[in-house]
Image 1 (tube, rainbow, N blue to C red):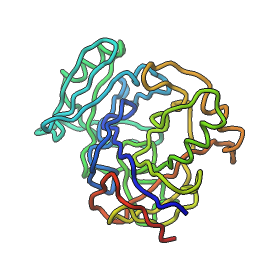
Image 2: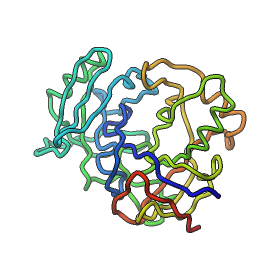
Image 3: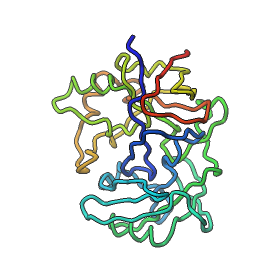
Length: 268
């Protein structure tokens, strides 16, 4: 078997907006540092997602000097917030899927900017590290917590898996359709489905369940246009239990750092 190597590391600081590629990242229980610690909610406190608002793909993010800068690529407007909020307002209950968690509005200014960019009333909220959101207990051996990601702290996908999919498609897709945290080279297509315990660099991870995919994967992350792929093709060979799977959800055993180029060693 070809050696397995970590080739890309991604975080998505604000849920459902653009990702940021990193050379190195700190591994925390809830996910990589700064990964999905913010999200947009409507006036009822319910999270916003590209599934309903595909134009959210048009927000691109960068990190500079302890600031997170968000740019709307069509309206050419940008806004910056602190990576580490210095003060937080009164917390409020917000909902993400079936979970209700406590989060803080970042600022009225931030909420106003996003409301203008999306043309819908919304608020930007921040989810502090100490706040609780449990991983599904059926898949959390140590009662792990997760950030504002859909359900699990980390997602890994092999380059071979994407290549296998693209070989079946008329038009090849980029990995950003699938929003992984980790991308690796080497190995067979979809072998990550079977990984149980493995090491990236010096950090052990547990593979807990393959990731079921939704219509967000059908949104072009550059144009926000929606289509039928890749779900149509994946449904022909990656569907079971009435769900379509691509990628493996992970929990972290250790909380150190990972770097591009780290070797991956399978333990079980």
